[in-house]
Image 1: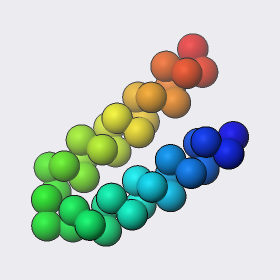
Image 2 (image 1 turned 45 degrees about the vertical axis):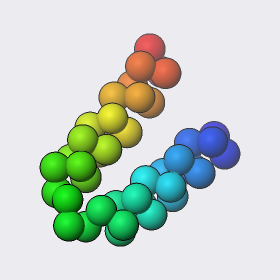
Image 3 (image 1 turned 60 degrees about the vertical axis):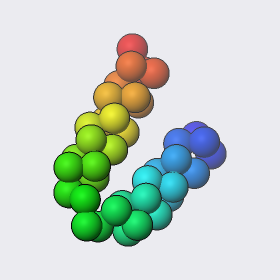
Image 4 (image 1 turned 180 degrees about the vertical axis):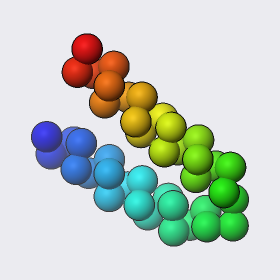
Length: 41
């Protein structure tokens, strides 16, 4: 659970850094959604 929270905060930081790159943000979100789904399954 700790790792998931840390990754989430890390993603937020990356989002703030890549505000000028919407495509990267979308890719990061997609990866963030797919990763936990695979982990649960």
